[in-house]
Image (cartoon, rainbow, N blue to C red; front, side, top):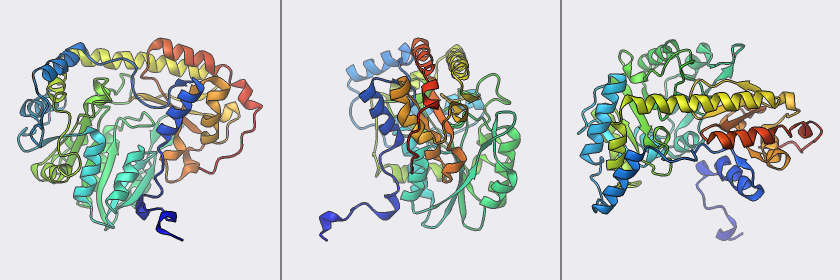
Length: 406
């Protein structure tokens, strides 16, 4: 055996192959299916933001920005968090701009975790979480979110307490939550905060959907950092991509106490160094848009959620109504499906629609084997076409695809 026969990838990253998003998007292109798999909008963001980006390009703001981000964006981020959440951050020492929220999460893991440290997280989880924990040499301690009789996902408090231990370094919390659409309630967050303080653990909160907690959720979005005793131990992460429909810009940020932000910056500088120079001024403009923008943005997504939930229900899915985000999950059992990966691989040929199997976001795939995720951040006409196509699904009841090993 020669070196060319051996996989050169480090052992800790070998479980992570091509992402499910790449596989499903490729399948959409190959089959001409409507892609409701990957969570990107098919319309552009606010015109004020786009105009500001064009002006910054033309004005020559195309060279390296300051490492923490341009001052006007950091000031806008601090003002935005004060305005909406009552959180005070010093823009000079408690805010850092990153290449999207994914880089912020990864930099935080690399900065805060020693090999063998444990990270409590909630499954199903966004796939980059597992990869970033592995890169840091840390250990995942997942707590499963399960749908209850009321259709809401929730964690078992006893399971969450058991996940914390002597090696717990931090908890990674995403709310509003992808892929389930769950919005963590104040009571649920209070218990998380209690455990963090009992175990002297940090919290990393991914809040990229902070403006997409729908009006019929049990509660609105509550940043964990607003709870007593949590600001000083919480690194709060968000980005422009979801709120301003510019997922390709990759402008994110982390806010928190100076020592945590400094740790992230010292790692981030060796990842991307800096990013998105002409886009940073445009995001600063977007953050300062009037409240009407954020209200209308949420209302528009809530309407499209209702459109897709109704269509999926009519097509025979058992739908779990999301409280936020871009996504809705649905059970495939009533349609004859027993495995989400098999179902999603067959769906483009059978109905001309792409979805994502949520079992790939679990350490325990059996917990989500019959659940799949659809994105509703698309134009209403696209959702209508997808729903019309999904009414072909009775054919799936008579099909017997091979069971996947994924």
